[in-house]
Image (cartoon, rainbow, N blue to C red; front, side, top):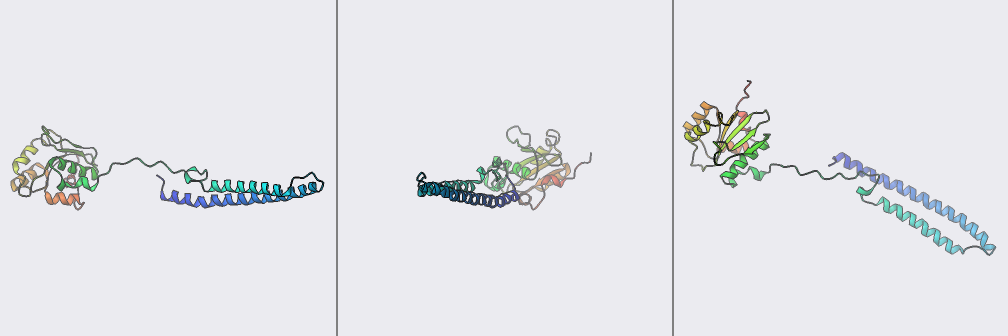
Length: 237
């Protein structure tokens, strides 16, 4: 797709091209009229000798010829921009580029499987690539696997719970037993729509697991808080 400056340049060139055509038309018409006058003078002289073509017929033929030339040139000037030799041919439309829409981030309108995809969409929006949803039977605690912009491997577990269903320490312990040793996480994150019990939060702090509760999730979604993998500093080693 061309830039705005290129489009404006094409618009400036179009009146100039039409102006050149108009000058050409005037020149041709003037040439035809001059030639016609000379031809008629000659025809008149021949008519006096009785061998000329009728002057009215010559006038009509010359006028039709001049009119045809003028119409042809003006039709060329009015041709679409894509067919004009002196105008830029519009570029082919750019291919569709995948984007993360607001619907993909709405975790309140999905089931638990859809919740994993909304969390993955948040990771992709904030620069992670690749991002993969791997939750399901035998996932060993990993629902989403992503790579941050700085190259860290982010393992996320997603818990779509009601407000009165808090994430307990057993949930954190199961995740803590696999996120680092099995999945090789640089950053381990548990994301929930509810909250964490105090023992769960303590265990997470001990193991270095980032906890994202419902309020933190809303802030992350609305860009009011940084992504959870930025909560931990990059290990210099």
